[in-house]
Length: 199
Image (cartoon, rainbow, N blue to C red; front, side, top):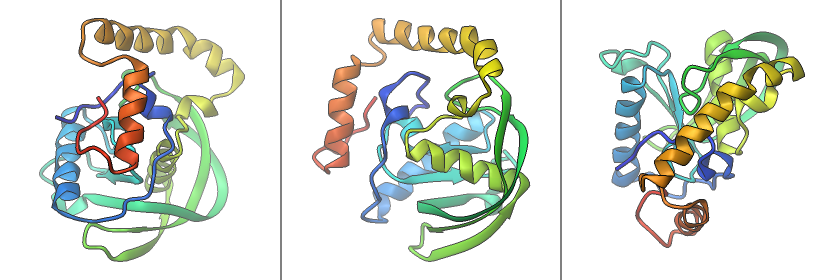
């Protein structure tokens, strides 16, 4: 069963591997991720945020489960061009309740495969641009807190520690296995040795 993992779950720092096949298993995972994202009131979710070490993420900027025509899936995404920069507030479902300003490119060109296996190239601005950059960073093991100013990092430190403490408590309760076991599961998944999720 998929769940959104909190900081500092090892999957969040795992550099994802390319998706090799677009099949029914992947489509089922994507649908589960959309359900989790809507439940958490998010607009985007990367695969490693649910313990899957693969290069794909989902978006729906409306955050509305009834607006399925706005759902987007980015498989093996690549940002090929960035234009100008803007600083705006960001949050992350793996850091509930934490929001800070982050500098991102205002406009980007990106390409990725969709769920039908088509290679799609898009020009994105503003929120869509920011969301694509945020989720693509996730797939490389980069988090939005890495991009905070020194002042904001100091201001966020206590809140980030609270999120991590919650994860450690969940680990102590057996909800998550030890980090070493999670890393072993992630490596096995990345090599195609296991069909389960690294929880």
